[in-house]
Image 1 (cartoon, rainbow, N blue to C red):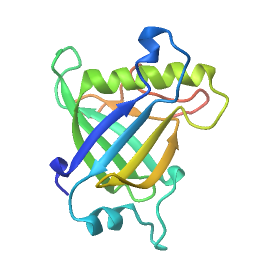
Image 2 (image 1 turned 180 degrees about the vertical axis):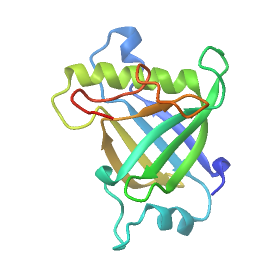
Image 3 (image 1 turned 90 degrees about the vertical axis):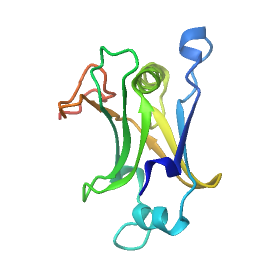
Length: 156
């Protein structure tokens, strides 16, 4: 599936810099390709939409994190099979800002999930995931623990 079929927007991240009350960071991923392609990837073997616990979110850098213009790939995968559900290009600075907002939100929230992922097709919501983990990898595939969002008590 082509990465240019996807558009990513983030919400509720500015409060970290403005000291406003915390709000759950949300990433909205909208798909503008053949509808059946995305549905096929989002379905489990039993024909139901994958749940949040059956998916993982990660960001893989394509350049060094030291590069101010570094970009990478945001990926949502099927946790059971490892298959990519979707991938799209994004700047590292934007992703790391989102991770920081989710980390700060997690310090004050007493609900499930540090952030929300909403996946839509042409603006119509298909599935929403409440997530607590977002793994960040360097260009060589090594986990960057300090930049990742890993809940306490989780061993990788």
